[in-house]
Length: 241
Image (tube, rainbow, N blue to C red):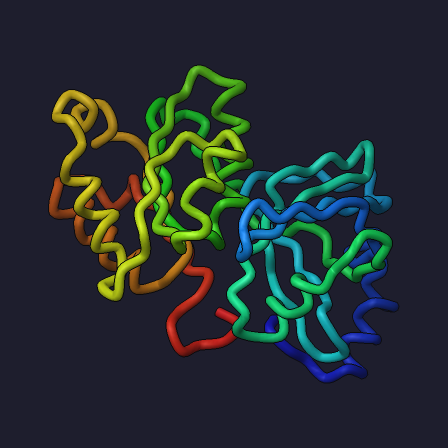
């Protein structure tokens, strides 16, 4: 829900208090100029978080934005989100200015578990807006016997961010032709590696056009549609997707 009238937002906070809560900012880190990691603390012991679920943050009287946590611990009341600062809209400006001690209104997690635990081989494709969810999946994979690869198209200032977070994926610069360099990297994968991953599960997230182009490249390489999960977070020229 990108925006709603203030009176409705205020009403929702009162009426759905079990699903909306106040949290405090306890730490902020910026591994690059356009990526900000924020840790929040609140009281939500009843929440059973599932990987890929989203929260919403009320960024002003009328605007809300959805984000996917990279970590969630209901028992301790702590969660973390890795945000993409794109300097293009109220959500980005709000997150950029958040500081330790601030109090924020959030809607508790909702949605489905997107993690395919049964898939031995898993593959990530996306951009800065996906690092948070990919890190949560990576952490789960590391607790199992599954394996992952990935290609992220990032701004030049963020190319080293995934590695700093322990996310071992290939990174490529963004291109005017969405996913161009990512597809080139995909096509250069060693044949022995591709034999393992071509029947794995693929998470494609982030920019809508990039997803479309990368999905086509996967289908051209014989990947089944049922093994591809897509989730567009944003599209060029559109707000609040």
